[in-house]
Image 1 (cartoon, helix red, strand yellow):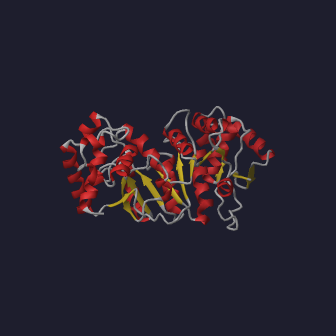
Image 2 (cartoon, rainbow, N blue to C red; image 1 turned 90 degrees about the vertical axis):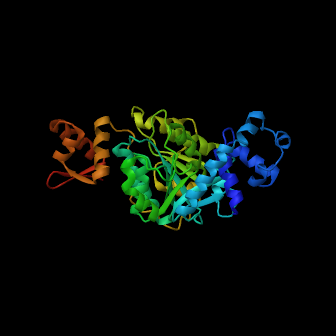
Image 3 (cartoon, helix red, strand yellow; image 1 turned 120 degrees about the vertical axis):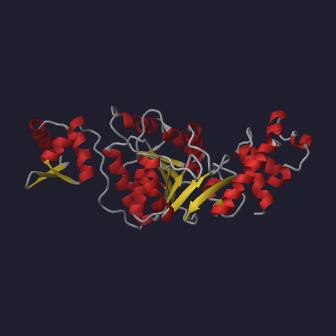
Length: 366
C-alpha cells in the first residue's frame, strides 16, 4: 500500500464521528481513502450519513498530524497491518459490517487456518471453569484450531496459556495500542503469545486501555471466529456482549452450563435458556456443530458435567477436576468442609459413581 493511502486510512481512524461502517461507505463512494480528502465537501455531504459536523471533523488537520506520528511508529517498529480490502485480511472479519478498516498486528499470526474459535468469559473464573477450559482446549488440540481471546484475567489468559501448552496458535485481541500492556501482570506471557501467534488491535500504539475500548475490541474477538465459546459469566459482563455480537454476525455461540445458584454461571445459563447459545457439554459438541473432520478421534476422556450435585458435592468435584487426585485432608482444606461431613459426602459421591477411593485416603473422579 502506498504511503498516501495508509496515511489517509490512519486519518480516517482518528476522525471523530467516522466509524468503520461510515469509513467503508466513504471509500466505496469515492474510490480510495486518499481521494476522500481530495474530494469537494459538497460532494461528500451528498453521501448518506455525512453531515456538516462530520465534514468538519474529517478535515481537521490535527488528525493528519496524529496519522503521521502513527505511521512513523509503524515504520520504525516494523508493525504489520491489514486493510479490509486486502487479500490477507481475515475472511471471517471481512464479512462483518463493522470490522476495522485497518488493524495492526504483532507476532507470527497465520490466518490460512480456518478453524478459529474465540473463548471468552469472566475475569473471576472458578475451578470449574478453569478445569473445563483447559480440558476443552486439550481435547480440541488434535484439530489444530486457532484460539482467540482478549488477554484479560480469568478465562482469557487461561485460554491463551492452554493453547500455548498444546502448541496451538493463539491470538490476543487488545483494547489498547501495541505499545501498552494490560494487565501489567500478563507481561510475562507476551513472548509466548507472540511466538505461538500474536496480538491484534485497531487502536493506535499509545492508546491506553479505556473502558469503552474493551467493548469495541469485542467485535474483533467475535468477528475473527467461526464460533464463540462462553466459559463462565455473571448475569452481566463483556463476554455476554461478545456473545451478542457473534449472534449478530450469525456465528455459532456455545455456553458452559452451571448450577442455577452459581453467580458465575448465570450469564451462560441465560444464554442457553434464551436460545442464544448451544449447550456445551464437551469438545464433541463443537466438533459436530462446526463440521470438523470427525475421523480425528476426540480423546475418550471427556470433560464431565454433574448438574444434580449439592453445593458441597460440586465443590469436591471442582477440586478433583483441577487436581485429578487428592488426599482427604487436602480436599477438606480446600473446600472448607469439616472432615466429619466430608467422609459422608465422599461416600455419597462414591455411590453415585462419581468419585473412587484409593489406598492412602486418596480420591479421584471415576
